[in-house]
Length: 169
Ligand code: FEO
Image 1 (cartoon, rainbow, N blue to C red):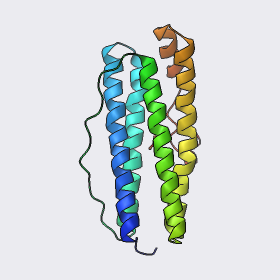
Image 2: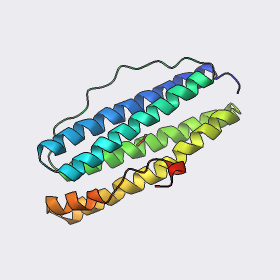
Image 3: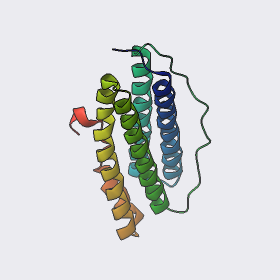
Image 4: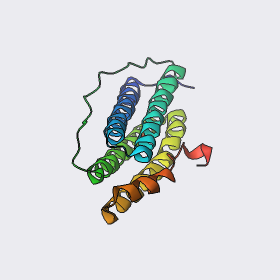
């Protein structure tokens, strides 16, 4: 594998930071939901938080494998208070859309640099983001259609985080 360019190293590190940041934000959402005794929703968000941490570690290992240096970033404080479950679902979908945009920008950069290894590595995330956006789109639909929090909680108990494209979830 060719050594990563300085620019790609910087951008892949920034994405690692965004994944850690998403992990913290989903954890803060899980705690809020747990405190409201919405256990299934809380568990969904605990698992989502762990999944984002795994995404961050994928970036970290890739940068290391490409003979560059990952740098653990300083993270912004996550939002911890919310008006409603709908606000949480909206914020989650908006976070995922932002991540999708960042991943696509990274693919553009890898293609510009003719870095085929990084492009191939990023394709896992391109697929993963399709699933992540679909999951949160469905959750948002359900929260908008139901004022019954227990029904939303029940719905989420059947919803698993995607686990990633190659895990077939
Ligand atoms: Fe790792 Fe949900 O983006």
